Image 1 (cartoon, rainbow, N blue to C red):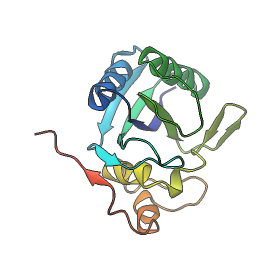
Image 2 (image 1 turned 90 degrees about the vertical axis):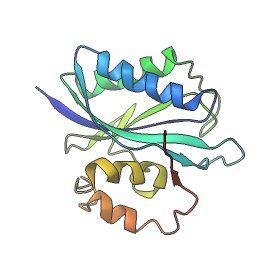
Image 3 (image 1 turned 120 degrees about the horizontal axis):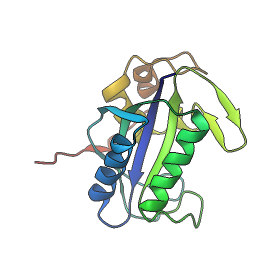
Image 4 (image 1 turned 90 degrees about the horizontal axis):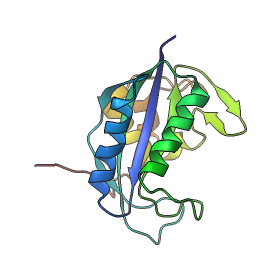
Amino acid sequence: MKHLAYLSIGGNMGDRLAYLKAALEALDHHPDCRLGLVSPIYETPAWGKTDQADFLNLACQVETDLSAQDFLALCQKIELDLDRVRIEKWGQRTIDLDIIFWDEEKIQEENLIVPHPYAHERAFVLLPLADIAADYRHPSFGQRVEELVSNLGDTSDIKKISLD
């Protein structure tokens, strides 16, 4: 059975753009995944722990035959392959792949909560997501992504970047 996942991908260490591209390539080259829409890239200040470098973030859509748990394992493998080291919560990282939405399901498991519990309050998640899924309804709140964006307040510190 095919599943539709929406991911938030970001990082703030090393060649941030190269890590984003490598994560997208890894997803796209996996035999059980097909990369769909990919948002523009945004440069955003760190969230949670703010005394660190700015992040590059994007959102993407992936169609997959994997279960949610197997897809999570794939995302974590990609992070490890791209030198992700978990030292502190909200700390700097080369790459972070977060499952924001999985089909229209709510998943509450020890190692996986979907929709992502903080997605609705994070501009670095919602702004890129709105570029590819503005009308997607958050399964817990029933609001469209673009409505959640309008609830964010000031997002002037988040910049869509051009790769030209």
